[in-house]
Image (cartoon, rainbow, N blue to C red; front, side, top):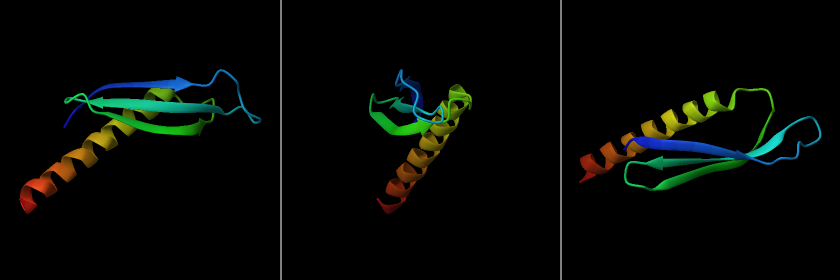
Length: 73
């Protein structure tokens, strides 16, 4: 199952230390959404990179589960 869309929403108020509460939403090719978070984004790491890494891992996990289901029949 491929992830076809990913987005994030961050709170507008920084926490003590500069972190910002962020929630990601990933949508697969069937239109099912997967929400990650909320988590405290550090305010410096590239969020697009984080989003891409999480989308890739989610797609890999979903593919492994789908394969497992096919094998178990």
